[in-house]
Amino acid sequence: MFHQKEKPKCLDLKLLALIPLLSLVVACGQAPDSARTQYTLAVIPKGTTHEFWKSVHAGAIKASREFSQSGTEVQINWSGPLREDDKEQQIQVVESFISRGVDGIVLAPLDEKALVRPVEEAVLAEIPSVIIDSGLASESIVSFVATDNRKGGELAARHLAGLLDGKGKAILVRYQEGSASTHNREEGFLAAMASDFPDIEIISSDQYAGATRDTGKRTAENLLNRYGDDVDGIFCPNESSTAGMLLALQDFGKVGKIRFVGFDCNETFIEAMSRSELHGVVVQDPLKMGYLGVKTILAHLKGEPVESRIDTGVLVITPENLDDPKIQQLIRPPLDTYLN
Image (cartoon, rainbow, N blue to C red; front, side, top):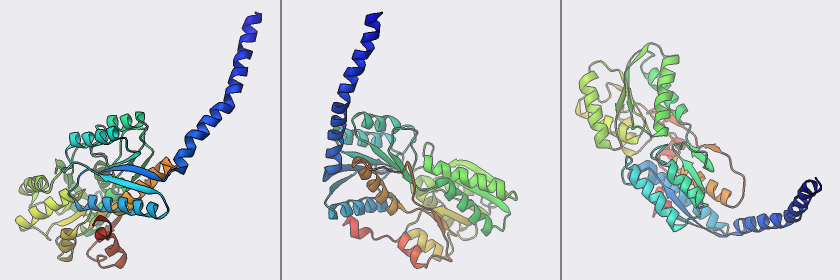
């Protein structure tokens, strides 16, 4: 009994003796992070062709330059798949940056499940990740910096319903399976239509446009062949599906006749709105998304607290508000300032 009582006391004394040493180790481990002046980051988009991702890139560069001005050198390594349906290539890009030992990753995952494994492998390699644009089914991330995509879908539903005076038949064109951001937009659209606009019938909501303008156009053509004489309104949840539908409507001679709301913005969409061929787009702030993605991962690396969810905003642009100076600043960000 004596030994059984004394043994815990010895352990307690040993642990007490170790506490100052452990505190010193923790302190020494934190100090270099807060004092560091050089970081290398990987910023990995879903694709590299759409205007949206160019704005994200510009935002990342903007953040890095601001840090450089304050004495912290930040190198941005920008790399991603060419197409927004190439999950394997995006996984390879993440794995490549892990092997290169970057300090942190800012990632827009193509698939909420497929990118979990490489992100968690990065954590095991002590490389933290901030997720932007589209969610990831993992708890092993620092923060999620993105649009409230469900709200974006709800805004699209309300705008389209207003154009239709609350009645008629509408089509939702989906993007692609596994994309959390567009899925949330689609579900937000359907939920708002069902709850607030019962006199609008959704006659198709199960067709996928795919990752490119061309695949989107083929899906749009199939839908117009089937429903073109009946449909009153259409919603597309991203840039490529919107572009594909716009081309199909032009080819079918129905452009401007069917009320059409898209998502994201480029010069083609702006011109289409000025001609009343496109009746509105829900827009994000991709430059802000890239900017805050980099700011957030660096704050974490420096030991500063960060929010687990950061909303970058969403609104509807219409032909009526297109010339507003604030809208123009949002849809025509100064990309050349940062990318050249």
